[in-house]
Length: 332
Ligand code: AHM
Ligand code: MG
Image (cartoon, rainbow, N blue to C red):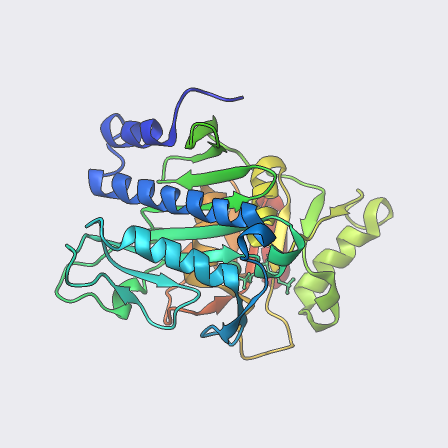
């Protein structure tokens, strides 16, 4: 149900009434939302805007960049560098941190993002998104990469914007999860759902099944039991979804429950998983927890992991609480 509460008003209320966010953080989130509007615009134009296809570059993780990966990254950097709210930014698409240039005032916050998540879906017109996480810069002198290496539990805001049939911004500042739908005529995000709750139980799982032969025993056991359906140990049938855009999969889980898994597998045994801790797992993990769900790497709560590297990878299992706890118990 649409409300007449804009994102701006929601944020002002979080600041004024709930005392949850300082003005600088509110302004920063406004700028992030504005960047998402521009990215949404570019995504919508698609081939008409010449934004589809591959760029001639690789990112730090050795992945071929899409044109939209780069465009989205630039939009976020340009929109956020001059406002005075940030000290530095970090992105999936940049090897090192981006320190706010000297010509602008430096703020108290650090912004991390995956500018365009689900890159493999760009050219096929399937939902993609932007994921972001905000940390407070530790007190001290010059900002450094070390300042970013904070546990997910220290996030002060996190969210994503999904560019799907609708453009929806999903946000937490530690006071539950709220969803805002982009009203294109008004040009503003309007609150469309508050106090989002992930049901504790589910009969729907999301995992890339093509990796099954590489999984570890606990994940294999969990999925086997789901697949066995009514006749198996779970005594009920399960459905499966895999969009290959974490934003879209997490959005479905926030909307109707489910469990999402991108676990460690044997393809690259030295890597803990495919997804990145700081700008994918942490913000998504916090959103899911704020909606009553759970997020783990199988052994440890995602938000408790102490990062050691900016682009660190992690095994991710998140969603409906009872299912996530079951998968964790299989790892015990
Ligand atoms: P990206 O940030 O380069 O787009 O990669 C992350 C994406 C996630 O959105 C999604 O869950 C996963 O990669 C899909 O991976 P796969 O193609 O291996 O199923
Ligand atoms: Mg991503």
